Length: 114
Image: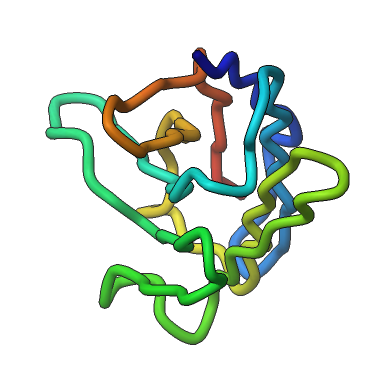
């Protein structure tokens, strides 16, 4: 089993940047595929970025070229670097770990507003 704790959310102006972190406890972090999802008010949760255990990445079209997902297996941590933020990026961001089951963090709020 994996426990996930996100951090790094907050309020940022349009065009600004944030870096989210997701720290995992439990064993064998490196074998899990990791993802960042987000859920805005009144909308369904959507996958934003994904990284496999081998380091391959994939992004939602809406964030390509602006967001970067990465992982540090030595630190049991996955990151989401978010640049050129837009108001429509406002959401609760969730970290997820997946192998045979999927595990979720508690979420961190990101608000993009002037």
